[in-house]
Image 1 (cartoon, helix red, strand yellow):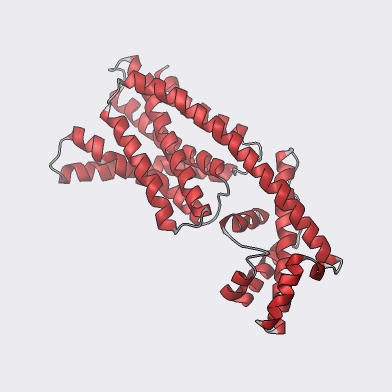
Image 2 (cartoon, rainbow, N blue to C red):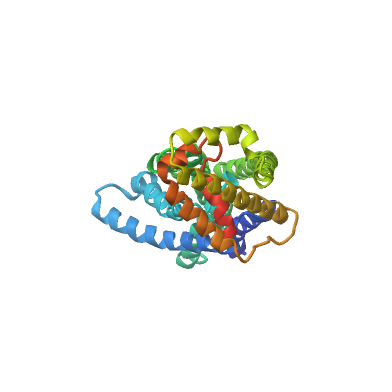
Length: 331
């Protein structure tokens, strides 16, 4: 029974988060990767903490409150930093689910270690507190870090500046938890009340944000691509803006910019189409030539250079979310 209360809560919570993801943007293999990394992070943290404790002159109690939270949170969050850096996460709710998965993997490894180490010699209450309190704290902290990191990156902050606020916050939260300012039972009850509420609000906000992004941007892109293919693009405000660039760029560059806009719109529409199909329970459509078109867009982006890309910002701005969106077509 101690194994159930110690390990099951965090697994059930993670499974619930995955099932509540209506747009199904969280990949199963990536989710498993995060869980596995969490277990690896627990092992790394154990050896790092053992080494640092032996080298330092502070007591175990102070170490657990001040240094252990830092090493543990850094090790857990590395997988989220990697996924965001590789543009594999598009929205805060996805970052939260992946983050919770990494924290869950850490908590499972840690709790299994304590179960094997302590055996039967401790009161059943300890395992309840570890299963419902400590485990959910680990998952919740890494989820919060993921939300703050992806939010910072999407606001186009420098990557290292986007990392720091989330890391500092989760370190403080972990340290406060380890200080036991409240009785452990009260801390556990607090986590059980607050954490589900935070995720419910985040899911609602994320779904509204995603729906607005899909509906408004999808409609605009379809209209613009339709005007291009009908030969009426120059009659639009975007077309007139592109025509005005003839005074600043060579004719070959204007052609590349035109092809760049057209191809980007086509790929962006297909990516959003697949997202809407998955939301409604259908399989995504992957055309056989999609890889060639993505490579062509990459080459066009290289040809127009940074100056050409900046000139296109009023029409098409390739930021973090746009690259993530196009990466979905590779799957």
